[in-house]
Amino acid sequence: MNIELTIFPEIFIIKPKTFIDKRGWFMESFRLDFIENTAGYPLRFCQDNLVKSSFGVLRGLHYQKPPFAQSKLVSVISGKVIDIIVDARVGSPNFGKYISIELSNKNQKQVFIPRGFAHGYICTSKTCIVSYKVDNYYNRESEVTIFYDDPDLSIDWKVPLEEINILEKQNDSFLFSQVNHFDFKKNLYD
Image 1 (cartoon, rainbow, N blue to C red):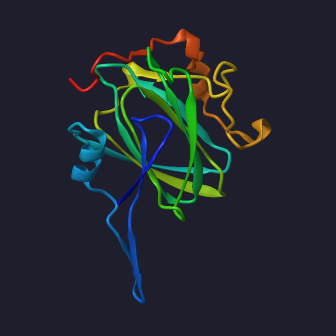
Image 2 (cartoon, rainbow, N blue to C red):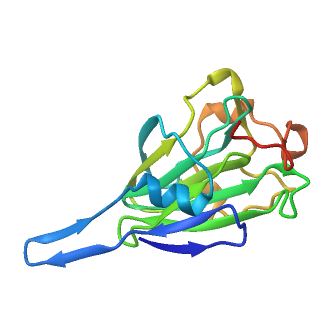
């Protein structure tokens, strides 16, 4: 597995090695020890999620408040997405900034997102299937959704606004400035 660093030191992209021969290919898609060594702390992935979407479907920006905060390992099994990660940690040098990563079944990249970040993605192919592991169970009462078009974040989703398809859940969204953020100095893994 190869690591690609991002502008956020806590977030990294994993590019698994693929071995190809006349029979097809083999890829080691997950190694907990590799991810823990790169992250620098132990993880306990406890839930796998699969999501199918069609072009323009936008999911996010979400996070769960402590003590239900989640780290995620995100990959795309089929199709292509633009993955957006926003630093929601007050006191962080990157607070309120975001990164955008293209994930697809062709580039086979995975992204590790630690606790303290809001996450969302938009399907940019006809359909896509996204897989993600989380290290804390889903808890509806602790979920926070930030408006995907928050003017303070100015996220470029790479899809024209009129083609973006959002869920009714977005009606319960907040502006980034209205939500309770994580504390950059607090350990979210205790």
